[in-house]
Length: 118
Image (cartoon, helix red, strand yellow):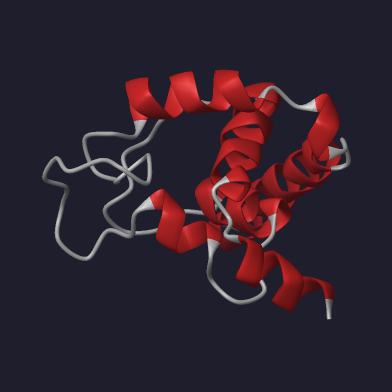
C-alpha cells in the first residue's frame, strides 16, 4: 500500500505541474522566477549566466539545464516535483514553480531554441 500512495502522490504533483505549465510563457513572471531562484536555488545552482560563485559539484547550472536538448518547462517542473537525490525539500506554489521554470527557459540560447523548433 505505501508504494501506491507514493505513486498517487507523484501523479498528483505531475498533474499540478501540468496545470501550471499550461500557461503561456508570456503570462508567467520571469522576473519573479529569477528573484525566487536567487533566493532559493543559488546555494546549489548557477542561477544566472554570469554567476561566478561556487556551486555544488555535479549540480547543473540553470543555463545548462535550459540548453539541454529537448528541455521544456514541463520537464523542469516534473523533475523538481519528483523525488530525487540531493535536492532539498522546498515547498513551491504552482505559480512559483511556473515562474522559476519560465526563468530557466528564458536562459535558453537562440541555437537551442531553433533546434527545438525543428
